[in-house]
Image 1 (spheres, rainbow, N blue to C red):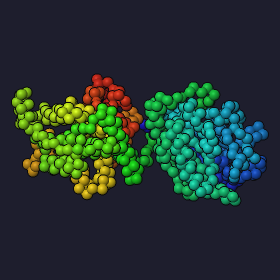
Image 2 (cartoon, rainbow, N blue to C red; image 1 turned 180 degrees about the vertical axis):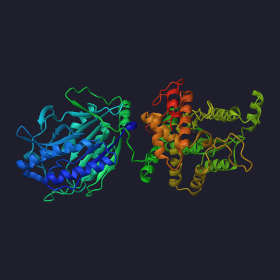
Image 3 (cartoon, rainbow, N blue to C red; image 1 turned 30 degrees about the horizontal axis):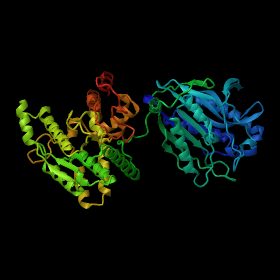
Image 4 (tube, rainbow, N blue to C red; image 1 turned 60 degrees about the vertical axis):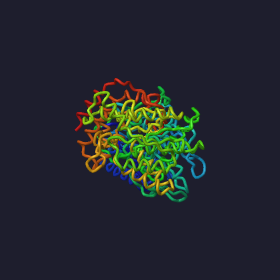
Amino acid sequence: MKDGFVKVAALTPKIKVADVEYNADQIKQHIKEASSKGAKILVFPELVLSGYTAHDLFAQKILLDKCAEKLSELADFSTDYDSLIFIGLPFEKDGKLYNAAAVLHQGSILAIIPKTYLPNYGEFYEARHFTRGNAAVETIVFNGMEIPFGTNILFESDALPSGLMVAAEICEDAWVLNPPSLKAAAAGANLVVNLSASNEIIGKDDFRRTMLSALSARMLAAYVYCSAGEGESTQDLVFGGHNIITQNGAILAESQLFRNEITYADVDIERLNAERRRMNTFEITSETEYLRVPFSFVGSETKLSFKPDRFPFVPDDEENRNRRCDEVLTIQAMGLKKRLAHICTKCAVIGISGGLDSTLALLVTARAFDSLHLDRKGIIAVTMPGFGTTDRTYTNAVTLVKTLGVTLKEISIVKSVRQHFEDIGQDENVHDVTYENCQARERTQILMDIANKYNGIVIGTGDMSELALGWATYNGDHMSMYGVNSGVPKTLVRHLVRYYADNCGDKTLKKVLLDVLDTPVSPELLPPDKDGKIAQQTEDLVGPYELHDFFLYYILRFGFRPSKVYRLAKLAFKGVYDVATIRKWLQSFYRRFFTQQFKRSCLPDGPKVGTIAVSPRGDLRMPSDAAATIWLKEAEKLK
């Protein structure tokens, strides 16, 4: 369970109704297989030991006795397996029969949890056989062992510093108005298992996915749902073995219908707990009525079987990605629209370089003007050639401006910057940070003054990734009157421009946008090479943006420590970057992120578009003088 990961499994064996011995053997085989894969939480279907469809055979004493006998045998069998195991069975207590889940761990029966809600409608008639479970926990004696019995039981592991707490419910319990799991989550449960026997009818699988995803999101928990499958009686019903594992609204894994599969997923308990800490409205109550049963795992390492997404800000699926891109562009444009309308201006000034960020900002500004029914001529796009400007970026900038129908101004900064060099005693041949920043600040001064001249505002072009790294000249490109890209990471900027190109319906515009996408990212503050091509490429200096965006997501969104971020990055970028490269840029990210907070502390307004932002007025209220010592020490020890 290193780094908060725990492998879970939903296991649907092929059973024989009422053949308890056969079913117990199948359960053993599945425990053995899942344990060999490193699964720590094992969940079997509802009444798996007897079969859910045994119906009136539940009244047969021999069936109940055989289930009790095999439960004891399975408990002994679990001694050799480092797992928490949930098995469904009919359980008799005080002359009443309960639809129950037995919880096994390393040779012991930790508890028996009865089902709370017994469906007695449609195809279900459980109340014919079973008694409703009681929340109050009592102690029963089974085979000479004292065992807690009741619904209000939580299983608490000491294997994680941040805590794993497991709760269980059974099938219908999840479908009701007030599921028991909600109360358990409020008491601290962050992983809920459900032993189910949900039959298949048309459309029920879609409803099940939606319901369980929403339930796990509401609880900020993981949810392991295991359903009965082939082997149950098909006299009137068919069971599909639909296993679903969700985590905070996202489906991590799902079985195919009618396959009787073992479904695995790696649940991230640290991530769930981080989300609960972040959401101060998620309140954990001190539920004294819950019995907390301790357990521990012998092994500490969870071998991860999933590969984290290399681009956490960008959906993999094209349809979702396109929808997300359109939504982001709309949020950006609507933010700017409100600002323009509020200050009653019909003019926006933007520096256009032919690069990605300024291109996106111009597209957003045009969209905002269109929504206000303003003439695009009110957008003043200023190209400011300098010492590093190349023919390619200059041509793209001019073509873009003309195609969009906005006003173009060209102002060379060479003469004014040379005068400034003379004023401050800067040697033009010394290409240091002063050489670069003089150009950036000159461009900003020009934009600000033009905005004053035409009663407009300067539109900022810098993106969130640059702000996280501090890759901006303080009071240069760092400054504007409204930063439309400030909530957009670099990896998403590319897809936004690509989406616009694919959907603009203008061949000339599409062609120039695609060439902008193909141009290396550069501030163009150093002279071109001997062939007239860009000599200064940003990612050679600060590192690959896809790595930095990955780091940014997991560090800010979930507060993961360096070792965990590194572990995830190695999986995500395997075959793309070697471990030394990942380690180098992770260390660089932490150094830059901490030392450059002073730039983020005085950012202009700009719209938040995703779950992460670096605005000092919202998501990142961080002191400019915070020390990165403990983060860097851990990052420097990574192997």
